[in-house]
Image (cartoon, rainbow, N blue to C red):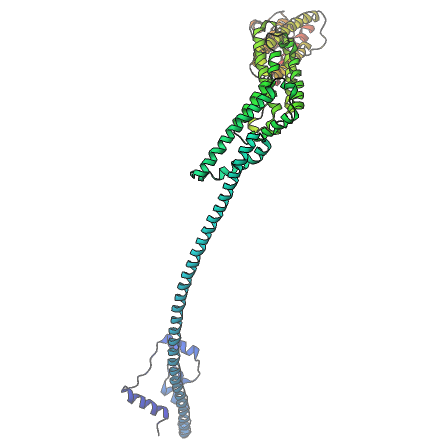
Length: 548
């Protein structure tokens, strides 16, 4: 039997390599994987192939051996088929191996080309980066040049404005053309502030010195113009419209000068406006006394109207000259009234004091309403209420003493009325009317005092209230408890120096001793009603005191 082509090729391969073919052994795991991927029902493909079982399967009996030639032919045909398939696979594998080598070589070539390209791109990127850095550097230089050029142009422009402004200021100042000065001065000051960091430059330093000298000259010149125009001979009746216009323009200039210049002019002008008031209401004048205090306030009302008519348009609105005059007037008035009241303290009575305080409070409220929309800064806003009226506080002891005297008379009146009412029979036990009258008077005094002061005088008034409440408890309540069979409890309560509470305790003790006596009558019905009235009045007083 001849060898198959595959066997011949295999033998040739074996001879060329000089090696004997070795059986291929694989691990069970690999074999299982192969079986799963290449599933086959052929017994020859099984790993546990048994040739004897396989032959017995083909020739199960002796009779079957008669067909052995046919079986052999089929086997040889199958072997040839398998050899052909194996040969095709081997040759195909050789082609694939060659193609693989070619692909590998091609891949190596492509990789080398790619590497060269990457190196080239990296070089180009580095070159681009260098170009970008150069361009960026050029842009930065150009940007700095632009900034420097812009700064130079602005500085030259500011310098031009400054030089031109200084010339205009010098000319306008010498000619007293304050409208022109006001239009130029602030812009020059603003430009000079922008050039602050360049003042070390000689030319700019010279210009800054000139501007400062102009401001000093303007301050002195404007102050002098105010004095000459307003304080000059017969100036009160001969200030022309042109002079007022000139001073109004000067005020616009002052707003650009130091704040001290404005304050000096305001202080001088306000004091000048109040010279007449100081002369009219000197402390040795009869018109300066409290009974004519309303004339002081009428003087200011009239004077403010005259001021607004004569000088209202001269001063800028934000200067609030009218309010400055009113504030200074209040300060002077408070000081003058304090001196007058100290010198003539013996002439002050409560009626006169309350009249003066009442007129003053009304006047302060009027000023507060008049200047409610002031442009003053909140930190400098003036509170008119109390600006004058606080000077009366040290004399409010007169008011407290007067109230003490009135309360003393009222207590005596209550005692007399109660003694008269005791002669009549008491039908019902009720709160004594005198208690309601007393606390009504307390409330009236308290409200009035709060309007005058909420400090020491209010404390003094409260002490006075305590004093007369104790007197009321002693003279009206305790002294009018029935004296028949007074027990030790009531006697000790009466003799004690307590107030409303002790009176209530005394009355309660009497009732308690009365209830313990059973049917023994010790007090009449009228006396019992009187005791109950005292109890009710004591309780009413306690509740009202807590409310106050």
